[in-house]
Image (cartoon, rainbow, N blue to C red; front, side, top):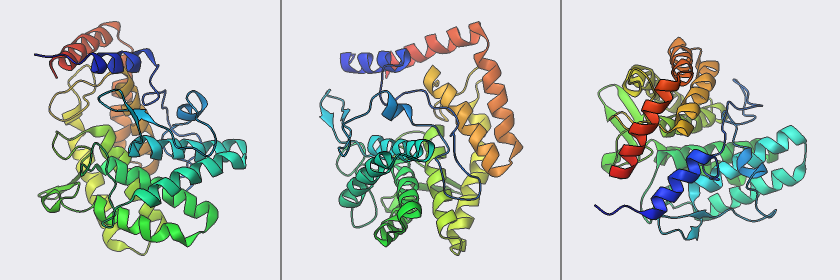
Length: 297
């Protein structure tokens, strides 16, 4: 079995807090439950620790270590800039968020999608975060050029996987897939659902999309136990351990989900997983198993 040295270096950077894709992401600092304001997850360290020159697009390493444009990274960078604009009242950050928004508009496919993990590979997480970025830019600028791309992005977000989309319907459960060819990833589903929530905030008259949001929300609550192994949270619903970064991200995402929905299940799992992390033995077990899974991946 060949082990990618690049993957090892990438994961080591993530654990050591030296990855611009895996900075500290606690609960959002300036979001609103009712309105479109700040983002629900605090992404600002993606700018404050690893900022790029104003007016340029950030680049990220691919599996070969080459620096490339990565849709999810760009959308998150734009959301981070937008939050910094709200927090610091500095128009420069709004302009940087708009720069990321312009990239989104120019790279969106006619069907509303964005390439994510390679040409023709799509992700609900990219769709959701693009919607969240573009709705905020529209809210601040009232520029109608964002409206049609937002609608198209939502349509692709909810397009069934059988038709080439990123949504999976199983009975009454509607799931949003960060990876269309892999198990269901919790953090990606939450980021995706936040995009649908922002769409519904912007277009409250769209009753069908609101119903689909509620359907996916209910499915998520139902499936939360699948992400708990008794001492740590799981990255996906087929037993992949969450790294320390993703374990803490889960906790903060669930805190925001509780604030947004008042569903007690989100609060209960956030508190349970926080207690898991307080145990030295739990942290060691989780780290060792995660390392083994990464090596075997």
